[in-house]
Image 1 (cartoon, rainbow over the protein chains, first blue to last red):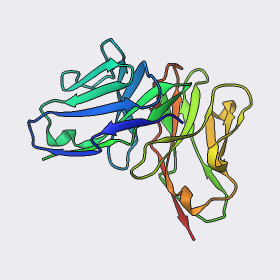
Image 2: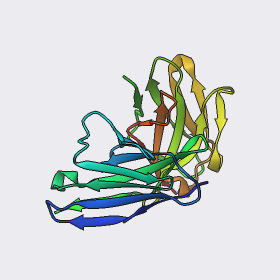
Image 3: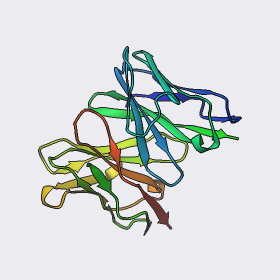
Image 4: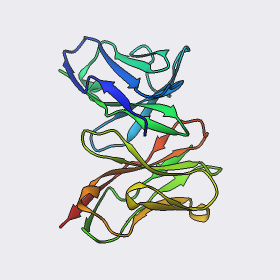
Length: 113
Length: 113
């Protein structure tokens, strides 16, 4: 299947700083990418839908000014957690849509101290 | 509102035994249905999907799932479990058929020798 990568795989940052997470589709072009958040022992919650060349669509309850999403090319979407706080600590997962299914990245573990 | 329910949080089966993981969904029409497996350090991997047609779907790794409209269910089965099947399993639906997935809570599968 198609490969989606995420970078970094884990990051630790201080409260108040911003963190950028990259999601790349390595062997196919994805006009649509999705960002999910997963808390320990819980399900994946869709945060936003990222469309190449247009603004992201955020799910209800997700702060668009806090979670900035940019989808500048058909192979790259970025999620920036701005002014991160400990409650933003979580596992962030992206997926890229293609060939009638979504291909998921391995996830990024964010820890905010 | 759309919802997906996986009633079993944790299941333990003996290696070689059969397995059934339950999934029920709530949606007005028949959504697209998926089963994913998540192993530590790896992205979600698609096991199988149902869009339409034959209600018994074959997937990878010897898994199958049966769509039952009358019960709004899409249970995952495997006749003989291997130790390597130990992982977290997620059922997901795409009600709008536009790629936005709603995930169940997940079922953690443990396999005992």
